[in-house]
Image 1 (cartoon, rainbow, N blue to C red):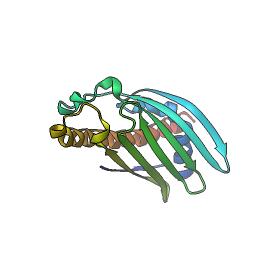
Image 2: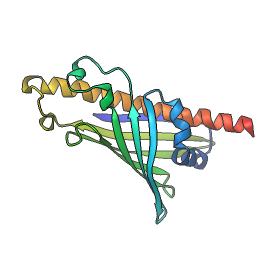
Image 3: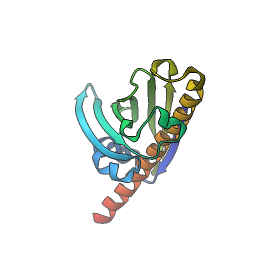
Length: 177
């Protein structure tokens, strides 16, 4: 499933980019699909910033997907590479459940549009039903399709909420200064 979520934030690109990269823990409260967030590691090397973050999500799992997923299984580790010279973020998500079955990768581009920043989030989510043990073959395609659709929409929503969180955070910071 293709993931696509664009947002505009009325602040300069460099400020939006560094806020998104460096203030992530302060932005999590703006994201309804996230219950908990933890930075596992962060290092800078050759102009790039590498981050590993662990996320714990939540939300109502659709009926057909409940045969495979529970809310407790909505945890993932995200591996990020931030390149400030290009104003990009490359990310890869590893789910804690069905790790071999799920592939989710993407990138975000932070584009300058006057005094506004356009964030173009693009990604790809695929689930291989053959890697999920105990899934009835005659239902596998339908179940996996429902899960991909639900997770893809959830990811898009999280991306848009995070961008909105950046906007709200920066507006609050501007009011306080």
